[in-house]
Length: 310
Image (tube, rainbow, N blue to C red; front, side):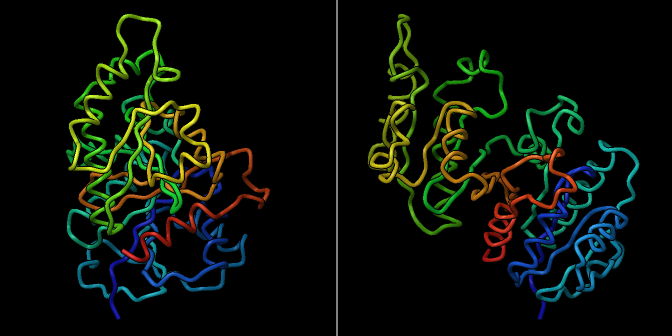
């Protein structure tokens, strides 16, 4: 029986991806076919090292349209490694083509070294993926069933954050989050928005929380279930956070630090606002852990579980 496959770009050559990949497959089965887009030499090293016994079938791009992908089966499209940046771009180029051709709407990418691979051209992989599909309105969602977070600005230096805290950007993120939850999760989320300043107060004459954030939230009255602005130092307390499904913050570490403290690796990174589902485990290449066989696969497991049901 044919099914929509999940495309997987393992990411950097030097990373823990294949360790957590084979651990994930040994701990749980997934019904969706999996298509790895990578160098087969790296894959074979992983197969031998982690004693993976299932057959992985190599497929070619020129006959992929006629291919019937079987449930529980793994495939590989070979991409020869040349250098890190070129290799990553070639892998993504193939994956994006398959998505644009309608083969699937599901993709996972492994850890990417933003400095080496993106070479400061993009703030992060989220922006790189969105730009590749000419999408201007998108957001980073760190998702867990109990609580998720979304930063208005992503990998932006702190001194530049305040300039990006404008009504348009905040409104855009609230709408994208609300639409994603309704479309893919089947319900209207309870959204909290955090202020920019400590305690939502400022010693300066101009206060972004009262002048920008509060009016945006008020504009959604009776349209979207959103409240705030809340102080960042108390919104994540147990009795406060249980009132919401997602918390939108003004900058990256304002919301990612508490969510990773609470759930550690039990969360996934979803780029929302795209015409397809792009998910990535919520951690980096973790080069210090390579070869130690102690990396936690739970984030990749959650990524595969999420797409397996879509």
